Image (cartoon, rainbow, N blue to C red; front, side, top):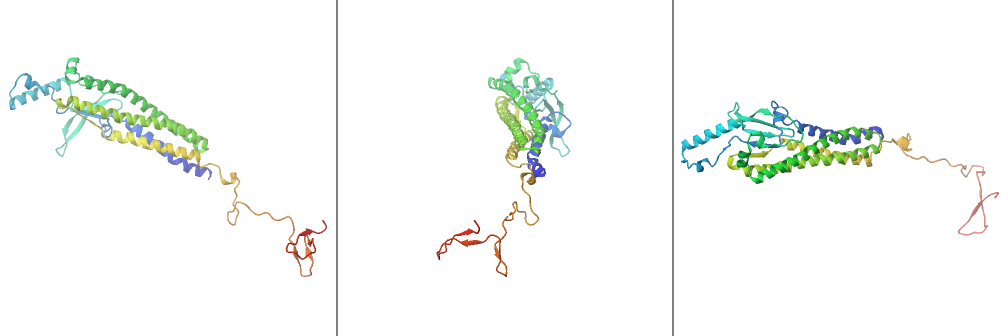
Length: 325
C-alpha cells in the first residue's frame, strides 16, 4: 500500500478528531461576547423573567378587589421591585458564566433578545439565582421551596464535574491529534492513538451527557418551583447540537483509529517481496529446468539422458531406468 495509502487510511480519523475539537471550542465560546449573535445563541439554560410577578398572593393577603386599578397597582409594584433588584428579562447560562438582557422590538414589529451584560468567566461555574437576582435569605426562602434549594445544591456539585470533564475532553482530544501524527508511520502509532482516543471519547460523552441531564433536571425544577411567579426556564438548542456533534465525531474517529491499527500497513509491496513483471503482474516466475530436454533429431540421435526398459517383458507397467546407472 505504501505511505500514500497509509496517509489516506488515517485521513478520516484525523479529520474527525479535528472536527470534534472544533465543536468543543465552539461550546466554550458561549457567553463570551455580548455583541456576538453566535455567542449569544450558545447557552445551556435560559430563565425568562420578562413576565415576573414578585408577589402573586398580594391580592389575597390584603383582600384587594379584582379590578383594573388593583391590577395596575400590582404591576407597578412588580415593576418597581424588578427595577430595584435589577432583574432583566432573560438570563442565558453558558459554560463559564451567564449573560442577561431585555426584549426589544425589531424592525418587523416583533420581539428580539438584546443582550446587555455578561458576567466574568470563572471555572466550575453554576448559576445561582439568589446571587444573580440580589435576593436576601428572607426573599430566597419565599421564592425557593425545599425541592428547588436541594436541586440547586446538586446542580452546583454536578456542574463542577461537568467542567472537569470538559477540560479533560479538550486536552485529550488535542493530544489525540498530536499522537495521531505518529500513525502515519506505523500501526503501532495507530494503536497508541486509539488508546488516547478512547479516553477522549469517554470524557466528551461524559461532558455532553452530564450537561444534557443536568440542565433538563434543572429546567423541570425551575418551572415547577417558580411557575406561580411567572418565571420560566428552558434548555438551549444550539449548544447541545455542538456538544453532541463533538461526541459523534469523537467516537467515529475512535473507530477509524482502531481500524487503522489493524489494517492499512505502511509497507510497500516491494519491501514485502512482491515484484511485478512487465507482462502481467505475476508474483512468481517459473525457473528453467537444469536438465536438457529429452528429444530426437531427424537422424535418430537422442539428446539428454536416455531411459531403457528395465524388465524386458511386455507388461502394462514398464519401468525405466537411467542408462549407465
